[in-house]
Length: 261
Length: 283
Image 1 (tube, rainbow over the protein chains, first blue to last red):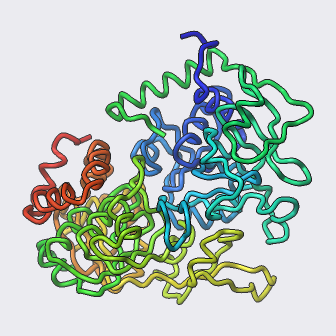
Image 2 (cartoon, rainbow over the protein chains, first blue to last red):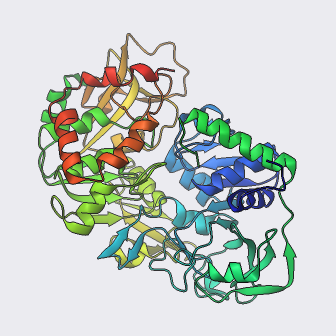
């Protein structure tokens, strides 16, 4: 395959990786965020500090971990600290620049639900829950979110506020005493979204190559707003796509066919 | 003072019906063998505390040991959902369970507060989070100096904690290396602690002075169970058995298959089987 031949998921991962810089200290959620962070590390941001909530600081895994506590994360880390220290000194202490989260359900203001579908006390589906996300969402300087677009995931109203984005929009974070920026970027398989400076509603700022406005709207449960200066995301470069595919191939070999996260 | 015991004796002596118990391990060093012994001994009405309940609590809940679960992430790490726990929450099978849900930060803080002998943990958390609305144990407190509103939750004070570690010395001092998780805090927060270990060595005189060591007088019981974390891993000994975690998703999806698997692999098994289970996984 050439670099002009790529899947929407590959475009999502690569677009997400580009948003990270060499100076970032990034708290990595499992799933799509982990792939994006490691592609960044292996391409344009070799000195990025990746932190997983298992306590590993400055980790550089050769393959993607299956879980946030894989041995590989510890073996390649600068240091590994106890979990209470991770949450108290490093996260709550304000030392993390980017928190990178995935979502089961997301609304237009970047609020995330990974707890339940349906009523909390009588759930239709009990999802795993928040893990570190509630405090990642408020303690990191800013939050990136990545997920594939689908109407059941990107919804008008989420069933549960696992982690707080911009709440009802506007200055809702400040009103709750939250000093950090919250979600500043949403990377999907179809587009890049940024919050409107005033309303904080996620607005499409860039369509990935070949993606139409209609496609973005069809896969989103709320009425999508597009920026007046809509751009097109540059396609993956040969280096980016090769790095991602090599990482995934190494990961599959290491985990016996199972894709890492 | 740590006693060296069989796993059967250690569980019988330290875990009672109705206890509040923490089996801790953060992906790494999960005390599977100890959990299986608790299942064999048929303990009832337990309150299970754990950040990531994962496979062992799925098994204990599915076998009806739990009355209540206190947790922050109810998933099978890297695989998906906990199907036995879901069945208990959604359908009351084999019994209904009460759940108390927190965030990871809250759970870690609650263990630390327990270890520190404090009644509650105070931290900057739960801002805008829905758990505040559904968990009455999440309260707030104003900083007496700045007025900042902070989250407060009760400290974890388990009756007993179970952990798995790499080494114990002949005195019963315990060494934990790698991803150390919340095990030290869980042990110090608990009234009693049982530690299963990969290896018992003469002494710790050649260790680096800053390693994570629990002195023998903080531990009630030390049990030699090689492979006792399987399918979790023990840094320096064997790798995580990822295939077993994937397999659990299939086994736990069906009540009958689950019940049969538990009989064959837990109820009719002995702690000694763990050493064989990690044979192909050595680093």
